[in-house]
Length: 206
Image (cartoon, rainbow, N blue to C red; front, side, top):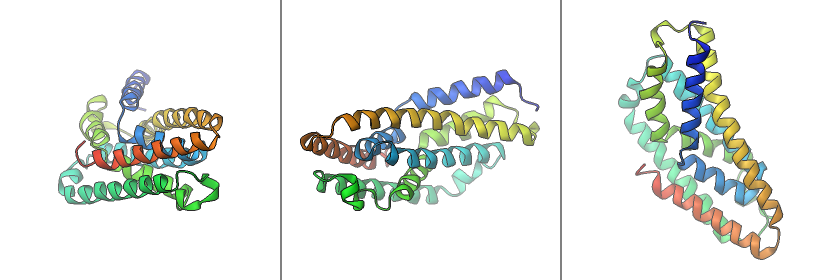
């Protein structure tokens, strides 16, 4: 590899800071963890990973011009995310008294919905776009990267947010298991629905 371990470590630390900065992905993880526990959260985390790897790979390949050339596409993608989170939020609030297993519409269509939601929210997240397209080239000399370097950078781009999101989802999911009373369930579902709607409302402006 041409990149050093210290360079990779600094990049991993920057990714950790990026993860610890609350944003749409955090809110989406909280909402799905509250509504369906860890089983509803981990597919979203996988979708986020795919988006993180795609953004880092695009930055490495030196095609940041895609962001400006296809700005209209990214705008459409963001509004798709808005619609998706609004729909999920309203659905949760309408069926706040029902267990997730009792009404599959709350997770429609389950794991795939979570994966797509994670992919869309990270691809339309300006914080991620700014980091990968604007700051990643500052960590490495992209013109001199070889295949092992690219694999290492993409691997770190995947592992750091994945571990963070899984820990977040598992933590919220564990709390959810404790609160199984009907009133508590209703409050959790309403809270999760409101969070999803909030994600939808802030996405156009972040």
